[in-house]
Length: 174
Image (tube, rainbow, N blue to C red; front, side, top):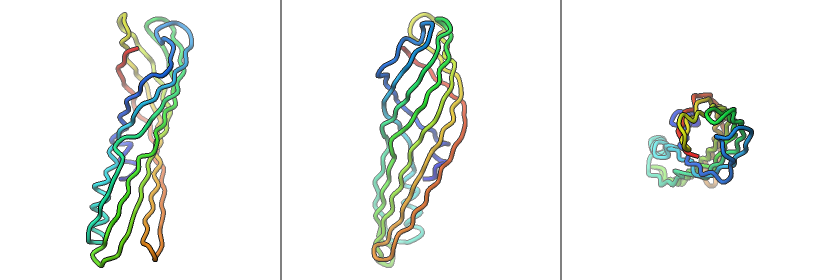
């Protein structure tokens, strides 16, 4: 899995509001949210690359979800329109690989990915009730670190960071 693939597939996040004042009211507010982030880090593709490169077989485990959070603040101009800025982050998505090459050499590899970012959005409450539409943009950064180890021979590590900006669209209920 490459960091660019996480940005391309996006993080799907389920956030539950822990504390937030009513965004429909006029004035400022603050929010803290926590939940789960889901991502396909394509561990099966990495395992196949290892088998194609070294032969033999490889067993692997990976995280499909991790904890995530978001801190936000905003201002409600009136009951229908507000502006919000937020900072989001995830825990680590880990993948571990243990292989045996075609020549009988044992090896292992570990990958770890995490994401952070800023978002800015306009909140529109088109009807009475708690439903809202969120439109804006985000700037996200994904960091990846990997280590490959052959016992008795040594190890190698690599790290990469990728960032990107994109459209933010959401529906919600207060």
